[in-house]
Length: 151
Image (cartoon, rainbow, N blue to C red):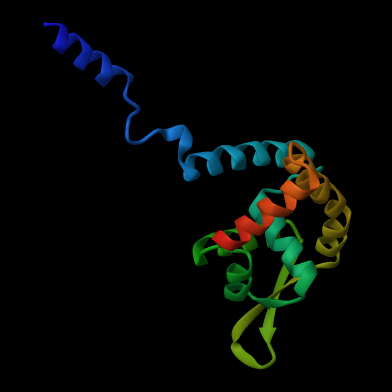
């Protein structure tokens, strides 16, 4: 009988093979939730992270096709289409025919979109700084290098 009691004890104290709090996906989701909360609080305008990604990438690269913009911002076809539709409805982006390929539409920032991207960029940089604030400079560099390696 003593043997079965100690066997039960060891079973109860044994670490399970899968501990959620130790899984990279779970940790990344928690970090994303924290970052998203900071973003929503501090972006300073009514933009979602995906809308900001599209605006900032267009400000960085200039006009490009919607598909190319989706690839550059890691959004699938349906997501980038919805993002651009919403930004266009707000007067922040516009589409025009590609002079090199009449079948393709180019997406670009309107003047209002360019102005908003310039206005919001400092907030976005501050959001990144706050997200990474618990880390020292070397840890931030290491984290970014490791995350880029995982992409």
